[in-house]
Image (cartoon, rainbow, N blue to C red; front, top):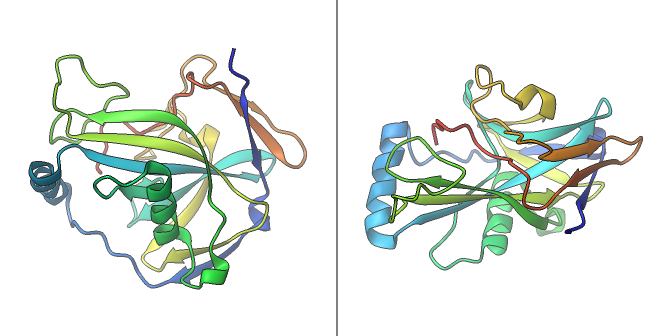
Length: 218
């Protein structure tokens, strides 16, 4: 039996937040993004992307950090890997691009934990699945979600055109009417024991279902 992984979460007030230059999206619509994905697929093959799950504590309850684009779309920080890039190093690069200050002395100490979910895009469509359908031999994208262990104190710099939200886990669960992304809990997927300080999140390896809405805009 694999021992559950312990994730320490610290109060949101422990972290300092600033801003940096805007980071513009490459596409202005879902259609443009899917078209660009098709072009890249023809050149590089299956798209591999990684995203980080960053947890903090607020009101004695774990919250997840999401980047808000515009007024309606939220996502985990991360993005597409370069061809042949290591997943862990690629995620650190993406986290720094989205959340780190430009000053080398203010770079967060990204501690990447286990991969807790893997999602597949079978076709050039918005729908993704937590498995690769057996009849699909050439999926278009594989997205992996990693736990990120935050230090007790960090400085985050958010691009001026984005917002960083701390959203309670209970608000995300099964609430796709409000949130574009959500956390899906299979039976006993995430065992949460909130202590005074820090909170301990215990996850059983292999049973965590932490991922995107099935019909994802991005």
